[in-house]
Image (cartoon, rainbow, N blue to C red; front, side, top):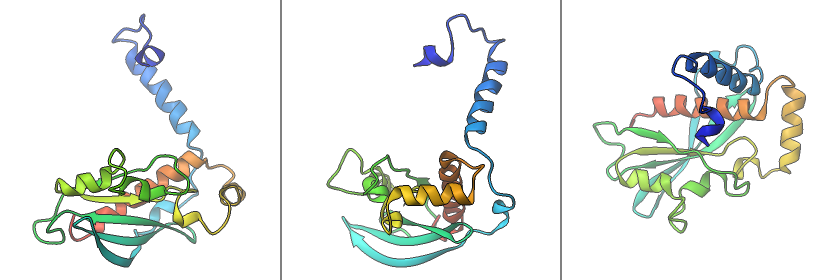
Length: 179
């Protein structure tokens, strides 16, 4: 894989230019965020708390953009919510449409349970549904969500929207009292 990014003939002097080209392509693939979306303060609300596998789980939803909200599960480490605050990790799920955030917190899937495993090691974890995935988007077929997105934001990309959702999740983590 590294040979696809850094060719054998590449020198250290070539790297700054190549890096800028790669970064430019990545940023262009994100599309254009709607104007002013970064101005709003992070908003979230707790929906429920439950214990699972010896850890406190908090289901919450947070505002993403316009009238869109997404759901997440926060897992507190043992003794979480107490002083001093714990370090936090945003645990991003794979492309399992049905499971979304649940895919990284399921003790029955030990190779994918990094949300739960990191909480066991002392971290607060936040696992959110990415745009188009998980229970947040079960109200209608995924394609309808995507079509509505492009109708509302024709210059933005799905990757750009998902990256924005992750930024908002980090904003939420920053506001949690146990982080």
